[in-house]
Each structure stands twice: as C-alpha cells, then as structure tokens.
Amino acid sequence: MARADLTFAPRLLPSPQAAAYLGVRETTLRGLSIPGGMLGSKRLYNPPGI
Image (cartoon, rainbow, N blue to C red; front, top):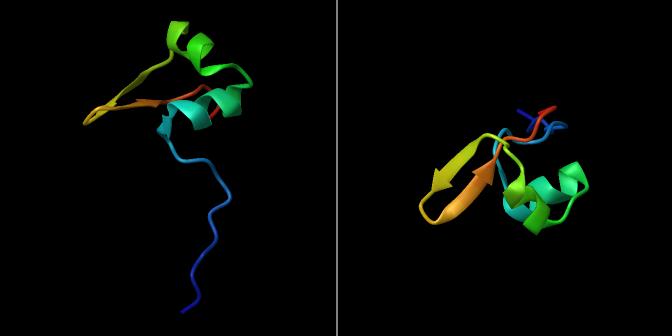
C-alpha cells in the first residue's frame, strides 16, 4: 500500500514554524494571544487558519 502524502499543516506548530506560517517574528508571536500549549519544555502554537 502506498503512503499518503499530507498536504496540510499540523495542528500544533513549534515557535519557528508558527511564526513563519503567520509571517511574523518569533518575538512578535510570543506577544500574540494564540492558543497553544507546552509539550515538555517546547511551546506549541495553534495559529488561526489551521
């Protein structure tokens, strides 16, 4: 069976990817009220539109 290619963004993104997705810097991202959470010591974001 062939593996399916995923063409959508993951639900929770680490800071660098979330900032790139939104077109802002990571420091700006931290100041926004975007829902997310922590996975260990890693902060994950759920940007709007995902």
